[in-house]
Image (cartoon, rainbow, N blue to C red; front, side):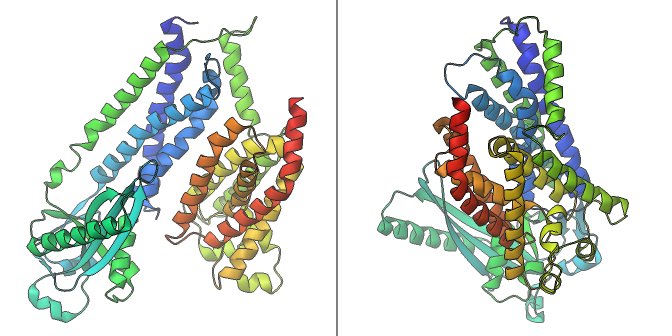
Length: 514
């Protein structure tokens, strides 16, 4: 088994198949659901976070069992290699999404900015005639930290400028288009407050000088900004100049290069990054030692056993019944709405309400069953998939140690608390989704990690990732369209329950080790 060709068959072959298959399938879904169908989803989520997050699913299902055959000098070796494999699969996938978005974007030619309302909505525009009004800017300043130990302090100044057909049009009122641009500077976050203030003042003065010198007439074409973090900052900048309905304004980013060359860099890097990923795995494999298969067990039998174990994850079984049942019920509700002809990518709010969505007025008037029914409804296929992935992973970790009955009980209680929080917070919103209950389970898990219920190595491995998962999803909720009230309600209720039950869980784990 320790010949290089055998290790290639055992480890490199599945890795390569996962990478290529995941890249192709994810790209097709992105093209079909987001680019072609126009599903409104945060572009940073699609291009960056999901490729890495979802890549972990096939890695831990198909590659992780094989990595357990490797002899390691340290604990968690298979887990760490699985994380590395996830990163190496996510890298070319995220590069491919940037290329796909740019390559499929259409260019619309406009004689003037006013024509944009009469033309088809596209990603790119070419303006034959335009005037940038520098005298009425909207400005938003941010300061964020980055780096492994928050060593870097990043200053950014976001500026939005009105775009008119000519200088004479500035007196006609609000423009149809806005140009977004920004200035940035990175300094050490370890500097004193006085040094930081001095650095910021210098940055502000330099940015002002660059702004004054720029005529903003060098652009060959413009990109229409979608749901990205920069867009949100520009919207905030518009609020500083009291623009009416700032969130509906069209914001463009100016491009100075040729439209035909926009994908020249990203396309080669899809193959380059894939090659780099393959090379890293090939080098690592050369230094690994593989344990032999169990006596009288062939590799074919092992593969069949792995598939059998995979199928069992989705079929209720002893010790793992609640999670598959919850996933099955959620999927059945979704399929029922699809069969009823209500949609696939998205469902309307009125249809979700009729099927059991949580609405304050109806719930408080006696439809208390909505506090539970809404937990099994989802706004569309992406909403369903995202929640089921989260449920699957937390169920895989918690249900075996909690027991199916207790897992289902905590899930339900957290879901009801999430629904009550949503009712308390929202006046006229139809709330649906399992995310509140799922956040409750992550809150439960967080409590057990903080109270060191699990072994130290396990706790260290999952504490950071759980905090990142919770923090990122709560931050995403601030962008709109997500019921963050339900998330917070579920998280807090689950955390409290986890705090109360941690002693029982720890005692059970200790008994299992004896």
